[in-house]
Length: 465
Image (cartoon, rainbow, N blue to C red):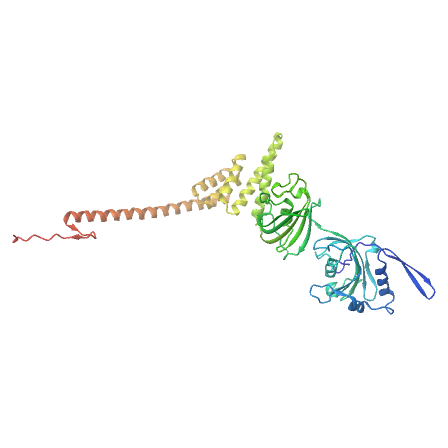
């Protein structure tokens, strides 16, 4: 009944048993179960409306508004206080019993009828809004009544056939227990969210994250710092595996507590620089301040590099196994070359193509991708050689023929540019030499002033002394 879909009823709960024994003009209720006072109150609301306050009047006089906006959309009356201590945080796995009724006292859902508790992750939109708000306000063992306006329940749609449209609902809820959200199947990382993040985007592997970390071992704070690292490559930064893994589950602005088992902390070795011994359990408070998501090609590079590392470590196998490993390595190198090509890291493209060629000297894809990388590096002659080799392997490769035409055009353009550069250079040299020759001849026939201009010598008079 509590799920977001208006046509689904929540599942899981126990039955409360009541027996009545009539004595004289009155009667006595005997309640079997742990929530006697609450069940009595709910029974009174259901079966004796004329003799008791209506739910609305009861909550107007005793109810506490627990909605963030204080619009009285969810009001609460505590019937039994729980154990003093923590309350559920966003994402926690909670175990509850409940009974849901309409204002006329008609029951529409109950965990007791199913004889098992209802389990969900609070604050994740798995139940109606009133429950996400109400359960987060409770303590372990607490029993309360929640009066929920339609906007915080099933709204104008209702939940046919049991809940009519625009119904205000009354719930009795008991919080049995709660624990952090498990981020791994083995329960090695538990998360409890203190502050919910923004939006729905998460860092992916290869993303650059900017975080604030506070690490504790027991009651001792051993680390508090702001740090930037790449998800999947945090080991060199002294960050435990559990923190790295949790990044992909977080949103920007989120602040959470991470409870790490030893294998997701610093393991058997511990961390001497932090004073962490072997097999220590850790608690980290992590705030994701910002992140830059990695593109799909960068993410793929990380995955293929891991595959290559694993395969290169295999040794001592039979001939057939080695052949299978070489085939897988060839594919991994080819895909790495493609990813690097898309990332415009052409030197890495050539390097991985060369590794393919060591395994298969006539690999068509490796030759072609190496040619593409060399063409984009303006190594036109080398690229032309690669594309011609592609045609030797596969004469019908049209893409290679097209690239050869481009290489030839680029080579011609390069030569034309060189010719223009050298022609201008030779012309300047010729002009310089011609000017120098003219000046020399003028020097021989006359005087040259300080501005290299020829000055005629004065003619000697025949009537001179």
